[in-house]
Length: 559
Image 1 (cartoon, helix red, strand yellow):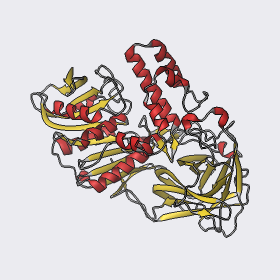
Image 2 (cartoon, rainbow, N blue to C red):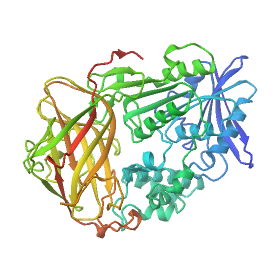
Image 3 (cartoon, one colour):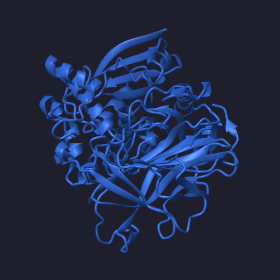
Image 4 (cartoon, rainbow, N blue to C red):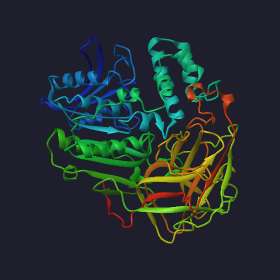
């Protein structure tokens, strides 16, 4: 039998924080699993995790707390601001509950993942391990912005959700209804598209306004992001190939491997931010792709809170779901195999014919230019990927027929291709405006001609400043630009092809670049300019994709 009760603590500054507590009916003192979240403690992140009752049935006290100013907790909610001190107060509180054995672990994803890192940064004695999922410690580069471009769809959707909850707590029905309706059809076409009037009217204090205004990694972001100094705990890191914050998950894992003497375990499944199921987008990855996280977390907590032995957690490990073969593979570290390079080659018509742009293992001595036009009236739409809902893999074959998308495709593969790890694109490009965007999508071309995306990246280009490291050609004012793609693990079968698609937009995942260099919060819809882009390849301009290629296949593992 599981007992549920609601209890409260008073923080050091006199604010009441409420929590639901689930515990087995036993006289035995048990470890505590803590989740701190801003969406109402009754939800308890059951969009991805088993219900707290299930965790309690495994022999734990489970505490789900409303953070300050959310749910029924007192105080004013300000994004991330109070999570260090409130997290420390909460850990000390749950460690001293009468039925607690003073051993505390934390779990949760997204905001709930980051509350763990904030709390752990204060090094509370009772906190023994955390399981941060789908989050980032670099709030600028791995959360709010990607490649210098504002993550419009993700940030605006989240801001409206947070603002709607604020309106609900205030009892402001007019604001709540307006925000709720907007959440179903996000407002991207106000006078200043990235700064909709709705948020200005109904939530002038929203974090969104600050995030949009701070478009460089300045002191604002340094102060807001959690500090990792002396952070040393066993951590189970959880990510998804189509999650918006995958870069942050992997970067945080690698940072902790460098900093921490404690075991760090990374698992990445073929999941979006939510849910964590077998199907993402239009691809079914099979039963093996269904979430295993609840069982894995119990094994983890049993190891570090109950002292049970589990050899797979004795050292750093990486467990990745390999799309295509639909198996899990184990690595001793984040894979960084020798790079495989494909160079771009074209007859100059790669935006009009799928056979005109080629990916080749050898850099061509001579290649034409590919010229294409970004029209803000009809920007290239986002389809799947990690930065847009619905996320995942979709057939891009009709999208790739657009004349404002340039495609480069390999010959049919002569053997299976295994990719695992980081991917990037290096493009030699010029434009007729001082600022422009580059969107790169990597896809698998199947035998029937369908084109399924599995990785993509985005880069906002601003004018070259003196003494930069960009490879610059004085002859034609051509620059080399790096685009970091979403990491992956995939098997592409023999006879299938690899394709790179490049465009000047991916809307509304990211705002349309006006070409004017104006900050996004000052860019009016009418400012948007038509931009002509030219991609150079071959010879002195070796545009290419750089892949982490597994020349040997690691044995699959069972979870």
